[in-house]
Length: 122
Image (cartoon, rainbow, N blue to C red; front, side):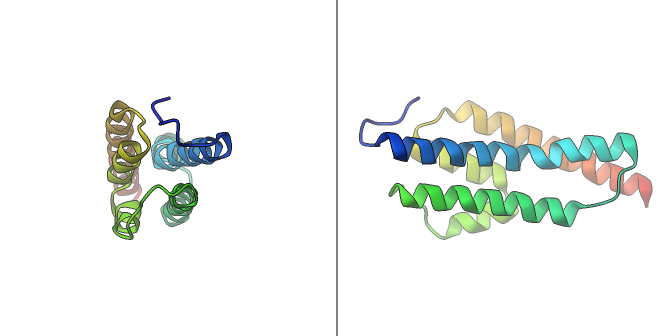
């Protein structure tokens, strides 16, 4: 998994739960962007942004509970550039960086699709 032997099984469990929250937070705007564009669903971007930010904040909390240093500037990354947060999270926990690049690209595509869908409706 790439993490050092210093982590206990409970800590690894927290790190993995947080990683799951990260993936969900990155995929939310993408999934809803596609659904919104194809099915003319109501615009809930504010709610999605809040949910994604909460999931990433929970992940940051999990990382701090296992003593992985996460400075407060990560909250800026959480709210304004989740792929940047994902990259730094992977760097600190030892996960592969290819995932953050993929999620970053998917996140950007999802945001573009969502904005295009909103522009089409307006």
